Length: 285
Image (cartoon, rainbow, N blue to C red; front, top):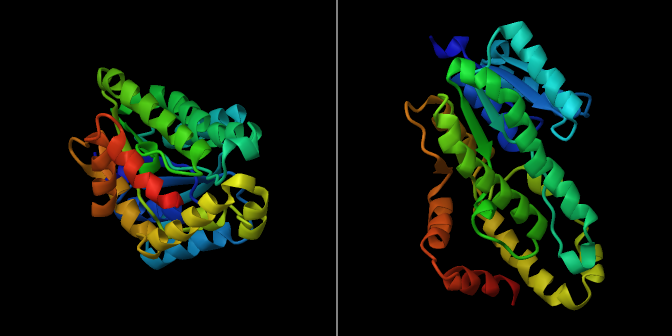
């Protein structure tokens, strides 16, 4: 079977890594179902269409609505894709939401919201896709983050959700392999995309509400701005997703850059946690 016969569904494709991954996968020959929560969002469809046209792959990308937090939407989208194409060869779980804050100030509601999108949404899409991926010998590829390996200050909810996804996928991988489905997590570091802007951070208001945590938050934001000055482009990060789609035997864990590999490597070699704590403590002073 050629890649042009293979169907890949990608979540969260209205911008950033998801949009770049849709274009890159189509460029690699896949037929792409590019999903987003709100297909009527101003500019999203135009941006996706323009990117696809510019890459010469518009005929291999279709846009569909999928809200990963709505079980009915997940079931309907997967059923429609299989009904129209007769198969599903890969799912790329990319949809996600960020959160900057700390639990004493924020309470539980934002934590639950981030978990719904970043964890439970991934679980539900994966669950719904697995029967079809078993039939095709397909792949589950999930965009997590270096924040799914290294806990980061003021990212408690986001990192908790990404840690949960990593644990879920690491546990699922050997089970899925017994029925012919490969599982990979893709771990980007800093990526220059709308993901950061979409958090809608009002820094003065955030600092004003931070109380005793304001000095640490101010230091964290200053450090993070520096990190994003050296960020990858979404297209660079999407290259790793295409690698996971096309490799004969994709790895379980795949970082998107040398910086991401070094960052994750520091944690994986840190048996007592002191190295990571020493590193991240310097971000808040």
